Amino acid sequence: MGRYDHTQYVSMTMEFRCNLKCVHCMIEGTMDRLTPESLDNFDRLLEHNARVGQWKGLILTGSEITLRRDLPELAKRARRAGFDHVRIQTHGMGLGRADFTRKLVEAGIDEFFVSIAGSDAASHDGITLVPGSFEKSVRGLENLDAYNNVAAITNSVITEKSYRLMPAIVDALAHIKNLTQMEFWFYFPMAESDEKGLVASHIEALPYLKDAISRARALGRNVEVKNFPECLLEQDSGLLLNDQPHLFIDPDFWIEFERNGFHQCVYRDVCESKQCLGLNTAYIEKFGLHADRLKPIQASSRTPPLLYRK
Image (tube, rainbow, N blue to C red; front, side, top):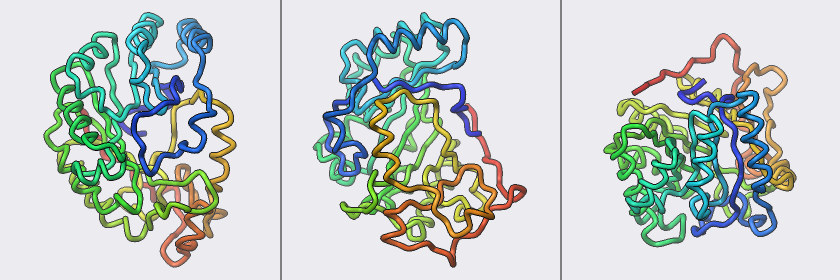
């Protein structure tokens, strides 16, 4: 378990619009036909949790949740319904406006999960395809540092374009005081093949990932790694956490998700890992099974993560 217990959170997809054009977007082909959760479903979730207290935190997500004009009101209602924490998943550009950030914090949003695609304007904006997006997102994280009662989490999708940037991403955000956790999510294409050429080799990415982990820990950050073979992480294996909060989303999303074909590994029948997703179909097609590099995990060999808490 990392800093944030995923079992204590519930996630609701409330938006399917976005003002970025990220090359690694998982749902770009389905965004126009996926339907956000309705306000009626939102009401039912609040009522349920107020009655039984199943979750402590609510995550408001979507392609870009800050495009909802009623976002502050949704957060206020969630707080009134008894949620201890309200988190948004965002690209962070809107947070670059200090007045907007203040409005969200005053509405009760106390956790901000911000996507950072690159280590500087050239690399980040080259992935989001929107000039100025890096500057706005980093300014947004800096704006959050004005508040003592909020926490920031960053997420970086790791692709062929970005895996070498992982250590530099950590360094670029070293000055952010409220940054509690950094997450590195290895890209999968929601398809059987890597048509965009974005899937990164786990073997080639490994030294950069380990360097990033070391740098983040030195800064007092927690780290979570997603969609990466646990056995390759060795002493950092406890940082692999593929668990996710319970998610309310259009069921059609899962039809696309299943095309990935996770849990393929030559050692699947003998490996005792509870977190590893193995390899997916697109990865194997591109890089093979890595039978000479992977190895089965024994339950007693899994290293618990070293946690930092502010």
